[in-house]
Image 1 (tube, rainbow, N blue to C red):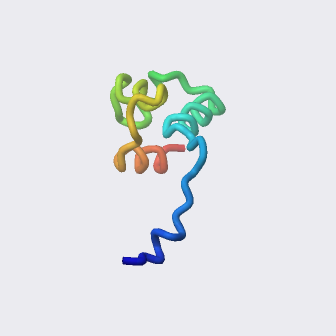
Image 2: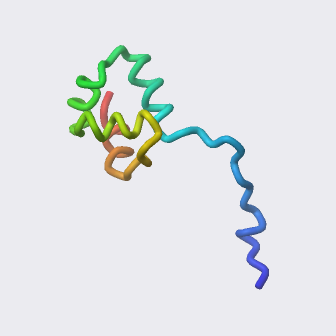
Length: 69
C-alpha cells in the first residue's frame, strides 16, 4: 500500500526537548520554579520532570502554558 501522507513525513533531526521552551520562557520572565508551578497550577515535581526532559508535555500543560501570561 502506497500512502502519500507517509511519504511526506520527514524526521526532525535533534528535536527540541519538550521542556526547553518552557525553561527558556520561565528564565526570560524571571520566574522561579515555585512561581511557575503556582501560575500553572501544577506540582513542582511535574514541572521538574518536564524541564529536565524526563516527561513529555501533556495536553493540560500545553493549555496551562498557553493561558498564563
